[in-house]
Every structure is written in C-alpha cells, then in structure tokens.
Figure 1 (cartoon, rainbow, N blue to C red):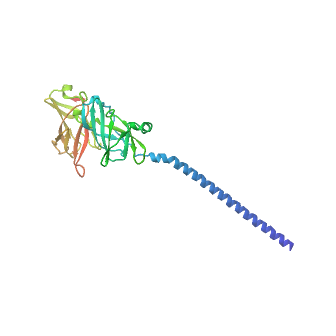
Figure 2 (cartoon, rainbow, N blue to C red):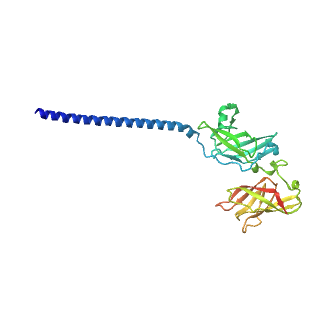
Figure 3 (cartoon, helix red, strand yellow):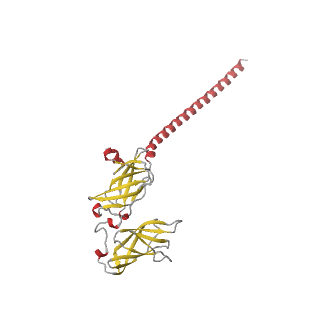
Length: 307
C-alpha cells in the first residue's frame, strides 16, 4: 500500500512540474508578444511622427519652366507701357490665368489673376525667407469674385524668380518658381536693340534663305528650315511651311493670315517683325476634334541669311 502511495506521489509531482513548465512557457510567450507589440508600436509611432511634416508639406510635382538658353530681360530693354504677358509656374496648384505687365520708371510690376482663391498672400523669395520676414513684406491678395489677384514686382523677364505662396487652408508657405515670358510680349513692347531688323542688318530688296526654329505647342509640329525670306520696300516676309496641312490660319501681331496652300503642307507668307528673337505667333490647327489656336514662337537667325 505504501508502495502504491509513493508511485502516485511521484506521478502527481511529474504532472505538476509539467504544468509549471507550460505556464512558464506561456508566460514567456506572452511577454515576448507584448514586447514585440510595444516595439512595433514605438516604431510605427516614430515613423508616423517623422512622416507628418513631410505629408503636410507635400506639393504637386514641380514642372519645368522657361526654356533652354533663356537670357534675362530687364526693364531697360522694354518700352514703357502695359502689356499682356504669359507666366510659367512651377506648380499646377499655382495657376495664373492672366497677367498684365507694367513697365514704368525703369521698373516692372505684374498683376496676376489666379485660377482660384486659395492663397492669402505672396512673398517674393522662398518660403523659408517668408517665415523670417515681417508681415509688412507680404503681398496681400486682392479679391475678385471667385479669384484672387496679386500685384508683384518683377526683377526680370525670362528668369526663374522665387515666389512663396501662403495657403489659407493649410496655413503653410509653399515654394514656387515663376518665369515671365518675354517671347509672349507684342513687338512694340521691345525697345531698340532688342532684335535685329531689315534696316539694322542692311538687307537690300531681294530673296534670301534663313534658318528658322519653331517652339511651342506639344513639340510635335515643325516648320521647314531654311525658309525663303523676301525683302521688299524695306520689309521682310518669310515662307512658313508646316509639317502638316492641318493649319488653316496664323496670327502675327494683330494680323490674321490665310494659307497660300494646304495641299500637302500648310504654307503661309508671314511678316517678319524682327530677327534674333522669338517672334510670337498663333496657328490654328484643325487636327483635333475642334479647331484650336496654339501659341508658338519663330526664331529667324540673322547670322544664317544667305542669297
């Protein structure tokens, strides 16, 4: 009988020891799980904290502005007056629908009408500079129904200019870059010496060839180069031959010009308002579902003029 009790006691001790081991393992597993969870939580919290400012500061992708080889055009190279001008913006969230450039007393200002009303004021510089500046240096918005207008100083045309915009909703400064395009100005805005003329080049009446370069649009269109250049009575005109026959008229200055031919290519005889600068023109294309006027520039290189 005593022997049976001893055996039972041994078995009972073994069972209790086994349960104890399982309890310890479960406790250890629970502790490990808790530790991992805590670590994960700490990592996640740290990541979220680090990402928050980046998310708040995120902006639309920056766009390329201006053009290769552009040279700054200062006020002294322009005639005084008011002119419509195109403005490139580095952000699609900072869209300028129209702009009026004023040249006076050797300085330039631009009145920019925005596509919306989301910005409260601007600062001509970076957002970092704006945060350090006094509020008196900010350019306040002028309200115009659903849009806002800013009048800003313009250091030069054809030059990237820093401009910080303050968002009403986010209460944050956003960095932008602007280029006021000299090639969108009418010819009468350009001062003496801004481009070469028939007179300054000493061109006699006759027919010549000249290299031309087209810019604008989607970049798919082109014109033949060299082009035929005709000088008559001290005025120059050029034969513009497009790469397709889908252009039904052109506009140079205030003059609407109809094509000479649209058989294989659209061919126009256009006045040359000047050489060695990007002469602004418009061309209406019928290649789309509805006709569209597209802005281009044509550069006539006077150094290539030959008989």
